[in-house]
Image (cartoon, rainbow, N blue to C red; front, side):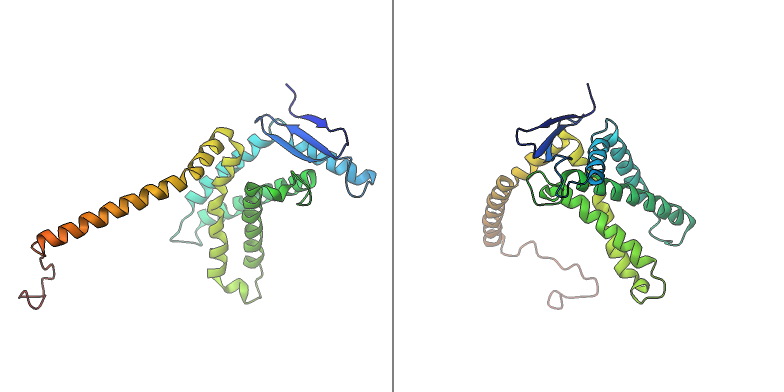
Length: 230
């Protein structure tokens, strides 16, 4: 089976690609770019070819897993340790891979103006947010002479968003995405169950207060000698 199959519709406006994961993605035809110059058409076709390669998603999954392991291996106590320095260089490489993936998919699918474009998918927006704030954190960190670079709290708050990287795996595993969608769709029913649970808890709490009337009261402050002081 080929790594990617392309089906151009009758009008020639969109391309539907079926990758190895079985997901159907719709985007503009590489030959139907807004500016029909041969160079841009070739670039878009190249990006479409790379994104639909057989091992492209597998490679991105491996990078996501490696990035998650690197996040878990960081030393939170000694931030300037040798281990953190090595992991920081790995983080540069991971962010570079995710940035290249973002650029390839934006060129292939388009930005936001047509159905099937990159930023019309919530998971793609999440990926873009993670990449954007990672790049901002790098820029802020390496602005040595500016006051913002000395604000470590700003850098830490931006780097915290890296923990969202493992969520990128959900969009790439169809069964995992189906489970996640089921959980999200069932949250409404779970909320209704919680309302019933809180209602019964309140009822039995009122009954217990009326029946026992403080008989189980005790003082746990050892500095108080009498009941009145407590």
